[in-house]
Amino acid sequence: MNGELHQEILRTEGLSKFFPGVKALDNVNFSLRRGEIMALLGENGAGKSTLIKALTGVYHADRGAIWLEGREIAPKNTAHAQQLGIGTVYQEVNLLPNMSVADNLFIGREPRRFGLLRRKEMEKRATALMASYGFSLDVREPLNRFSVAMQQIVAICRAIDLSAKVLILDEPTASLDTQEVEMLFTLMRQLRDSGVSLIFVTHFLDQVYAVSDRITVLRNGGFVGCRETRELPQIELVKMMLGRELEHNALQRAGRTLLSDKPVAAFEDFGKKGTIAPFSLQVRPGEIVGLAGLLGSGRTETAEVIFGIKPADSGKAWIKGKPQTLRSPHQASCLG
Image (cartoon, rainbow, N blue to C red; front, top):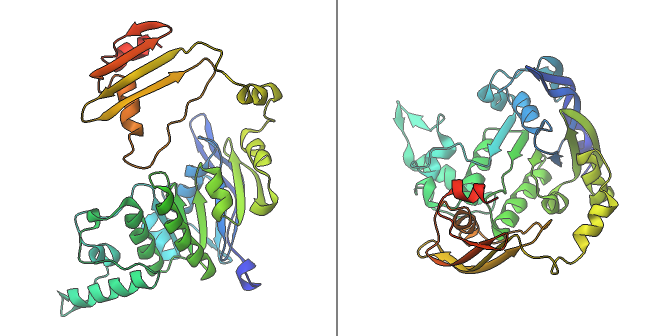
C-alpha cells in the first residue's frame, strides 16, 4: 500500500456504552487505516458487536467520539451511517430474497424516467457492477436462487455502490465452505486494493491470518491491543483474547492420547433414515470431538440425532457404559 493508503480513515476516542450492570464498551480507542483489512477479535461478550452497532448508529455511545476522515460523526441509524460512508454486511444477509439481484442492488435508488422504472437500464447497470468485481450472473434471477456466499457478495457490491468507505463484515464466513470463503477473500482483497477499508469480524483464526493486515482485540468491553497480523504469533493472539497464559498442563493433556479411557458416550451404526446415514462415534472423558464438513455434509443432523431432536431409527447408543435409547432432548440432557 502506498503512503495515502496508510492514512487513518476511522477512529474512536474513549468510546463507551453502558447497560444496567454491564460495561459493554469501556473507553475503546480504535483506529482503521484507509485500504486495509482489520480483523476484530475477542471472545463472546468482548464488545465486538457493541462497537459495530455504535459505529453504524444502532447504538448511541454514552461517552466518546467517532471520527471519519478527520471529521467527528454521530450516526443516527444504519441508513445515516451508510450515507456517511460506513456499510455493514452481516452473516444473515439483510436483503429481499424473493426479489431479483438487480432489484436488491438498486432498491430505493432505481433508475426512473417520468416516474417509471427503467428495468432494462437497471439490469444493465447491475450486470456491469457485478462484472466489475469478476462475477457473472443473471441479475434477473431472484436472490434466493443463489448461494449464501453469492448473496453476501451482492450485499457487499450494493454497499460499495452506495459509496461505502468503510465496510464492516460481521461473521461473513460462518456458513460458507472453503471454496466460498476464498471467493469472498478475493473480493475483500480487491476492495482493499481499491482503497476501501474493511473490518472483518470472525472466530476463525486461520482466516484472520489468511486475509487481514492488522488485528484488533477486545476483551470485557475494553481495548486490549492492535498488532500487525504478520508480526503476531497465534499463541500470543490467543493470550490477548483470553487475558491469561494457556496452562501448561492443559496443553499437555490436549496432546496426550485418550484411547485408554473408556468412552462416556458411544454410538454404533447410529442414524436416521432420510436425515443422516449410520455413523459410529466415541467420546472420552476430557475430550473435545469436532464435527467437520461442508454445508450439507450432515454435521447439524448428526448433533440432532445424538441429542434426540430427531430420534435415531438404527444403531445403538451407550451413555456411561449403559445402553440407552435417545428419544428426546430432555432425556438426553438427563443422561448428561
